[in-house]
Image (cartoon, rainbow, N blue to C red):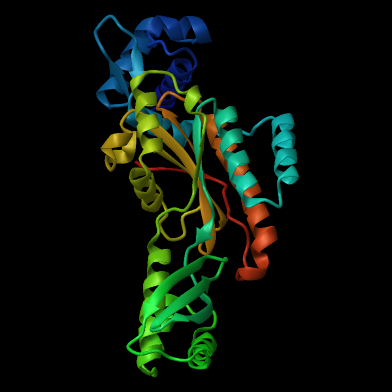
Length: 355
């Protein structure tokens, strides 16, 4: 939990963080008084800076230096002081126009979203393609190849196709294989993994063996943390510790998948801001990730995000992630709504910050 601040302490913390983000220079009491024409003395401001340091919101590297924000200071700023920020109208219009030019091509959406976020944030970005939260059975084919070998083709909701070879105990004619496939298609039509397992008690030997493979395929599809990842903006990252860490995160698919799955708890909506790893990911020390899910969150969704050092333009980046996520949600809902349950696109209003 945050330690409570007085109105004046909040004002000073807000000014320190905004000034440091803009200049990159540690902020002292004299600088604040001169820049913002404060109606208090430098001594009063100095005392408040010391108090903010004792509470863990600011740090002073040595006694003659100004203060810089800590991770706790950034979190307080984002959650309580940042306020509302929208991208300028001309930027929103340009972004919307670009999306509607590419609206029929999913790969173009992903590449465009990553490029727009990298350009808007002047940092790096990543976007994951939308995928099913829960996969459903769509269609099965069993095709005799030679001898006891059978090709199993399984199609899941959303169009994912899995092919694998099955070795039978003895050769079977194609008519028998087709009959088995048709029975399973009728039995498992639009079923989830749990529903298929529940129906598995009324099968002959071959049907049970094929069902075991079907369950394995859907289980792997359901547990897949992220699908394709689109990255952009690595050239925007300068060589300081925070940006070096950001580059490492973007290159580590397993870590990226862990971060995404760790922020996608049931019902999570809106923009999320992860500062310094939140005590969970040591690799994110000195980094901030601003991310949001898009799509129909509990059914078919992906993630858009910007990543960079903790010293970043939070207002602009939160607004950019929110706007792009909203646009992507609308496109996904418009072009995939015939495959989805009734509902609304992702609600991306609000900002969530871990304390």
